[in-house]
Length: 353
Ligand code: KG4
Ligand code: ZN
View 1 (cartoon, rainbow, N blue to C red):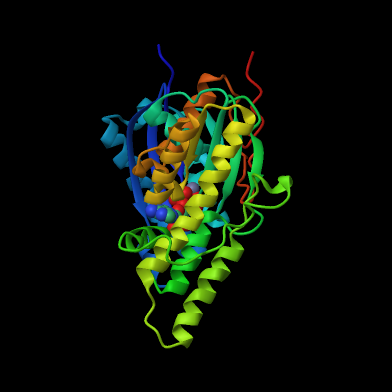
View 2 (view 1 turned 90 degrees about the vertical axis):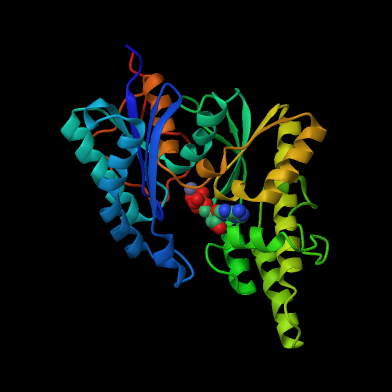
């Protein structure tokens, strides 16, 4: 008998995801998004997201099972995002996961959303080398991590953002540029026709005290984008949007990849993994490739569909926890909307002897 099929459920933000993983292999997955319902508000509305999860969860789990050619009875464990994320949205996923785990008589695992982003890459490229440096760049988080055994070891933060997350910065800049939500993909598309050297946007925290080497700050860049837009509008000039988007994207990609490669070099780590929604950015990907090749670092970036929120990545963490012999979560486990990233599981998991 091999290890069990793990169902992963993700509902921390606006995507309802379900995925099935066994032994590091993705068997099937499905996704529903309430993104369109939030677009006219310019950002995710928590109550709308939670309600959409209520409607989508059961169909999405069914669809993932159908995609894998499996039945509910084949599920051997359930993993669910218990934090961080929107409280109401997380609670819908957790309630669903508890119901399923209880009904099927299988163990439940509470998973840290960001560990899910890290594990997403293992579904495409196999186990993570120990150690790896991981750059997580999502709508809510920007961190440089030193990861050893994801299921067992504490995750070491080499640096985090002092203010906005990289994705948030894309979303806010897109809004001042007058581009639609979500801003990252819109800026990426608009930047294609632009000159990345046209506007000298700042590169925050790339100079100065050594304490800032792996720390990020994006609020200044967001303000610079706003000032640039205001200057053009006040002068009555049409906004050279493609140039602005390309230059802005270049600044973010430059800062992210420069710090990530420096972290690998300083810690003598040969593998960089870039994950999270912003890892879908074309310039972040190409600049990371260029700089890793120059520094002799091997780069791993999950395919686009695994970069943004999904259920497969949560199943991937659950599968690692199950195979590491981690203890399951009690059925009264609750959500932790602002959980810091210390371990992949959000409950004590000392391996069963
Ligand atoms: O990881 P994710 O799907 O959700 C969170 O956990 O936050 O990341 C969403 C973020 C959004 O801010 C979105 O604008 C950004 O990822 N994003 C991108 C791109 N695709 C998504 N940012 C830049 N370029 C992209 N192509
Ligand atoms: Zn995410």
